[in-house]
Image 1 (tube, rainbow, N blue to C red):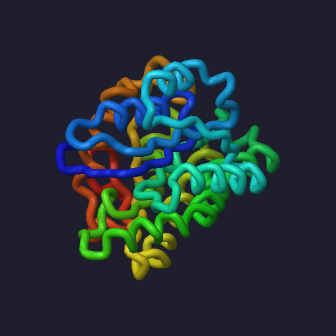
Image 2: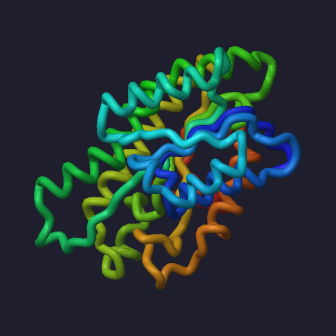
Length: 256
């Protein structure tokens, strides 16, 4: 992480699990500290660990943000824009996500739509709203190589989104609604990569692995600290050549 110089970062879905661990990682980053860390979640008033961290770190601000609510997104954008005081946003990490555990015979239209609303449409709307701040950050550093230090969108996906790997994993974890929504997120990332590259912003999708969170469960082989520690090293290496790629938490390319 020594080479990663980030002035500002927004992490949504940050009240627990991977999002919370990402916030901790940015707070403890070696080298120049991150000037502004925005930890966004639906109910910051009840996010006790975030509240505790923000009381100890002046560079951490909690922000109310429901990625499924356009009004909430607009309000979060206004709040963060004011806090940045004319500066851009270097890094947006779309981490908020949900999953349901159904067999293919039990799924409903309502469940499928809920997956897409949070896991795919949410990142689309949040990135649309915050893109002016990402573009501003890129313009502030016109000679810098495209990277997370300049301006980047990281969409947290899943290895379960890999269509090619589905036959190897489906019998263990069907998660078909989740798989579909995250595969759609991968396509969204690929489209963002094409749309934003002329403005100096890169977009990459990263799978954190099977992690011991409320979603991943206690049998998952990875602890949040280990997954996020590896992802932070990956963030440090991302450049224009990674734009639009689907990577795992170790930086290895995953099959679509």
